[in-house]
Image (cartoon, rainbow over all chains, first blue to last red; front, top):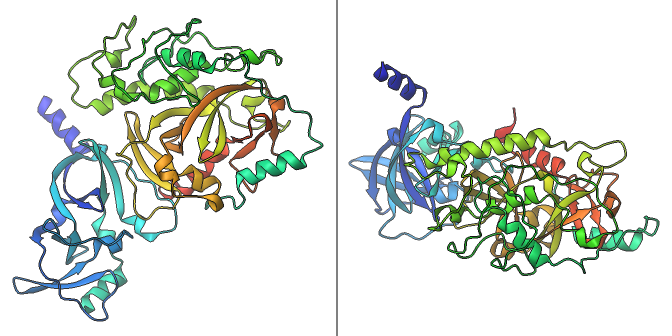
Length: 161
Length: 329
């Protein structure tokens, strides 16, 4: 009986795992199911004519992967590359891309009920990338909706890259 | 709906009002000569020390332990400096009416009960301070016990407080050009926002929390959105008040000087302020009520005696709520 109750509760309030990373001093989270791997920073080959939010491409075991400038995409100031810089390979909207982050922190477990809706004020379209926020371990996690990171047109542009 | 931030500075507005409004009725001048604000503040701060303590019956004799300077320090610098709390049911609701010619009662008449709650809410750190707690009737939330999810445990009593308070608030405006809460004498708390003094009716205040390093900005938001300030009662969507009310005079220095966030009761929004000043009890005639609130919907009126702008909390809240696209139906 208790097990059944627990199962019901967990299905109503599923626990999700989030990979957290740092960007401009803030902590962000992305769904672990969309993370394929985390790479140390390696040289990114710029692509002439690519959109401004594209840093370039890398060779990942024979596959070309486009790397997105996450800071630029989020409207943040650009940062410097250091030993903590990582390229997180993600799958979003059936596309595989890399996102450049300052560092990768950990994997946290969050109940769905712990996630709060973030405000969306202003006219900047990038606000839609924020899926929600969660106060965890004395810090506020900003959870990113990766599937909204690029529009359909922008995904097409990436394919051209 | 988008936010139309005022283009004219409130200071200009206040100055213009003072010099142009020759036909306005004579405003009673503020007279705080008989008020010992330090003593008053001590009394107020002694009324409660944790956000979830029921506001206390304020003792008439001020305590000596809480220093208060010109600005009422709502955030204890030292967690070990804990005022002696008392816990008494909320039965000391002051009368809304008082003699207008009693300046010494100006501060004393304010809704101490409400203010106690606000001030105590600014001291969440005291909850964890190792201080002896001679509580007479500790609330269930304060009873030490293993807490698996401290946030949830702390939020429950506050939800109750908010609900209780919401039921008592009527922010509508009457035909006489005044809001419901200003039909008789009413209490306001004054705040400093980069040189500008703002007054917020006490009845509409939620909590006062210190702005900490945990204030988290979110990308893609309007400039006047400072970020989310985690508090024991949840996130407060913090507004850069200086930028919101007087963008033409905005100085980014405000980001360094802002110390507190004052939340609007019932809303998740709060206003960043530099300092919290003394409470005031006002007569409705002390206020030059705005007849047209189209340009600055958040402005209820101006208080000449204190050279400050009185915030229309209902409209301010409506503006903020409307600006949040994630809250729109």
